[in-house]
Length: 76
Length: 119
Image (cartoon, rainbow over all chains, first blue to last red; front, side, top):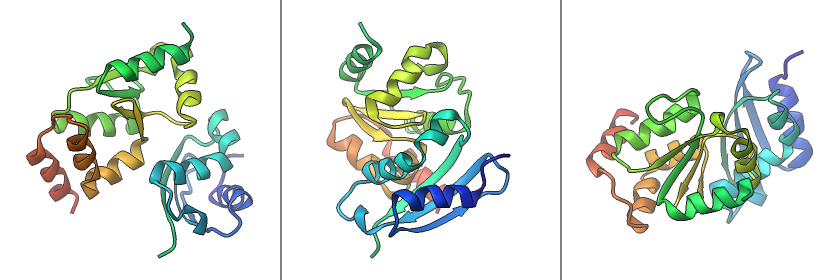
């Protein structure tokens, strides 16, 4: 069964419990996620996205999750 | 030389390096072709490394930068980001700033055209 948007949301939330997470994508392959987390304050984009990628490490490495367009920022 | 040493040497010896799937003229993945397209259009001189032709580099680069996906852009030895980040930086003008700060030549008019086209 292909990975779903809600699977991705749960995985990210497991790693970033305080984050606001919006995941879109219903073709099982291509997803877009926006993650807004207080811990991102003071981090540059690479560090922010590394934190999100870390929550999805297994799925990214196995190729189960191939295309994830990420936008990240700290809350205003 | 391990893959890590080879990668370190490559990013040290070349101002701009793009680890990608395929080559700058024949990209073989949507994300790689977007980043290569931006750099080509902006007239940035860069080394394209086709990770599909070397499995060791393909895995090694992910360890090297602790970044799980390809493409990966390096400017003066520093990891800049993957496709999303490079696009965001291009549209925000941060890429122009970074290239200018690091003394990497590019065509500012073309960069403006990209932004205008995506406004």
